[in-house]
Structure formats: C-alpha cells, structure tokens
Image 1 (spheres, rainbow, N blue to C red):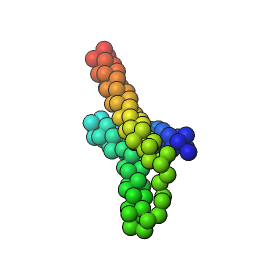
Image 2: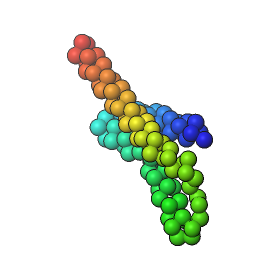
Image 3: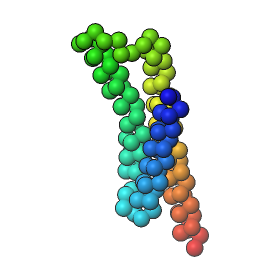
Image 4: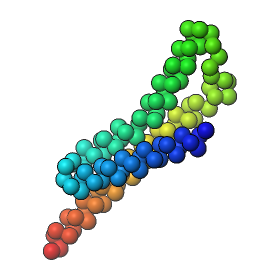
Amino acid sequence: MALILFGVVLALQIWQWHRLSGLVARARMSRLKALLVHLAWSMVPLLLAVSALLGAIGLESAFGLDVISEAVARTTPFLFGLLLLLGLLGSAAFGIASLASALRERRAKGGA
C-alpha cells in the first residue's frame, strides 16, 4: 500500500514538474511562481492523508467504529513525515533545476 502511495506522489510531482517547466519555458509563468505552485501541489497528498485520518477519527468518535487499527495508528506519523519529506525534496529539486536553467540562460546570453 505504501508503494502505491509513494508511486502516486512521485507521479504527481513528475507531472507537475513537466507542466510547470513548460510554462516557464514559454514565459507564461515566472520561476518563483512555478516553484510556489509546485510546492503547493506537492503537499496535496499530505493534506489528503491528514484529512483521511481526521475523518477516520471522526467516525470512531461519532459511531464507535474501529476504523484505524493500532498498527496503522503507530505508523501514521512516520507516513506523514515521509509524505512531507517527499514533497519538500521534490520542490527543492524543482527549485534547484529552475535556478540552474536560469543560470545557463544567463551565461548563454552573456557569452553571445
């Protein structure tokens, strides 16, 4: 299950990277705005996981249903930490690649 979740997170980040790189290349979006949009999209899986946990806790308190097992409850902080780390690492990589691209463009203009 965790592999599926991480695969979905990575697929979302790759899709966003490709989409935002294209918008920056066509000068339809600034690099800073693209970085902020990438950061926001990379936090979507974390927000969905937190909302699912809060919904499960609400079901437990409202109806007395045992939705979350003890093992899942113990691994939840670890899972949230990994989702946060993946989101931040993806956004940092996007920012570094965007900065490197800007430096390459500046060198090409200055050298010509």
